[in-house]
Structure formats: C-alpha cells, structure tokens
Image 1 (spheres, rainbow, N blue to C red):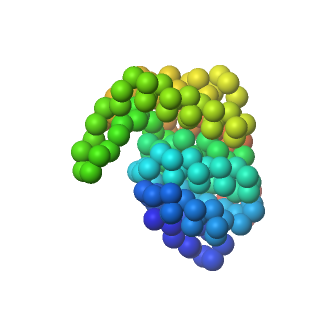
Image 2: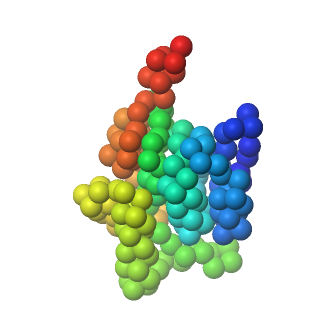
Length: 170
C-alpha cells in the first residue's frame, strides 16, 4: 500500500505485487522523501521499488522496514532513522496460494545471488552485502533478525538520526 501524505511525502506500508511497485515508481519524484513503515511483502516488488528509490535518489525516513522492505531500505543513498526504527531480515520462502513453503537449495542460492547483486548495484559495499546475506542465511523464515536505532547504520548507506536533523532544522 502506498499512501501520499502532505503531498510531498510518499509512505510505503506494504507492497505485494509488481503492479504496486510500478505505480510507486511512476509517482516517485527525484529526491522525494519516502516514509517506510512496513512489515514487508513481495521481494521482487520491493526490489523494483528499491531500484526506483536508488535511481531517483529518494530520501528515506525509516520507521520499520521488515522482511523484503529491509532490503529495499538499503537502496537509498540517504536515510534517516529514529531511536525506535527497526530493520529486520529473515530467510526467504515461497508462497503458493496461502501456504508458505521452504525453497529448494538452488532456488535459495539463486535468490540470495539476486539480492546480493541488487545490493551491490545500489552501491552497498561487498562487506555490508555479505553481512546482509549471512544474516538472511542465519535467520529462519519464521523469525526476524532485527537491527534497531543506530545499529541500522550497519546496513544503510548514508544514514543519520532524524532527531538530530529536526534539532538542527529548528
């Protein structure tokens, strides 16, 4: 779900289809602020949104970016976080109908290579890319590995505390 708030800030809460990702890309303006408060959704849709965020140099305000939204959060060239902000990763899985299913080893390997190549195409350095991939490998699909507050800087590019920016702007 993409909401428009204050006419210049886009909000991402979920993204479950490629059509939603394409709609997001169409309305996203260069250097626009995008607020992320998401439990996740379709990995490929979030990766497409990440491509648009990176290409248009959108700035993220991250409250919550879990699952597929966590990968997308790494696409921003600049992001601000709060003390309570959280990014979470877990092993991917397939959904067929309403059923979650484990992936085969080749599917899993191909998906992690895809995630790693996306992260690097967004400018994430190889060490951080491997940190994210290893975290993904090590966290079961029914769990979440969470990074909170300042710890999120381990997986984001140019990150700063939103509270600091608000104080400076007053």
